[in-house]
Image (cartoon, one colour):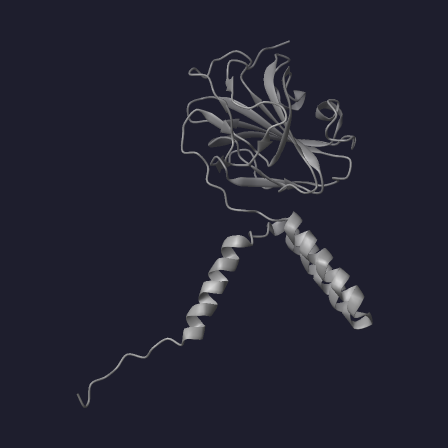
Length: 251
């Protein structure tokens, strides 16, 4: 009919481009803010190298991509269950032992269950809250830079320790430990902050270890040698009572 208005059609190329962008975003993980200066620096160096030589420019592009990949912060789906502690980091479970928590947290000398996860340079290096609750204490301690897979690393290496209290009253400690290559621990939370399980709270640069301390009567659900996915893998079920053994034992 004459005079009838027709709706404009979206060009086919526009829909295809939007699909490609959406697909790229689903595959390429976001970048942690702490990595932006490094990526920008690498990109600037690549532009300089590109003017000198195409080959050097290609090397710079590859290195820039590697730096961006190291600082990736992929989205994770955390189990919606109460009374559990999830992995604070991607990596490999190196130890499940009884050990005293870092003395600077003021938890006494009693033994807790310590689950240690070793991160290689190829793992995602952001750390995620193992439980939902309140950050009741944050303590940084300078130290050595021994290989993070050594047992002594938990005591001697530079570390940053968090004490978390869940709404049910459980206390859980998580410790970022610098490794042989790692020389920088980033922590984004302070005492009094509220966190949700699986939420990113920090990062360790270039190889490290993360220790999780839970009450001794928790039910551990993993074994040494297993791989963990930060924010998703359930490491332990916490005891029914928050007054379980392994908490606040004075020595």
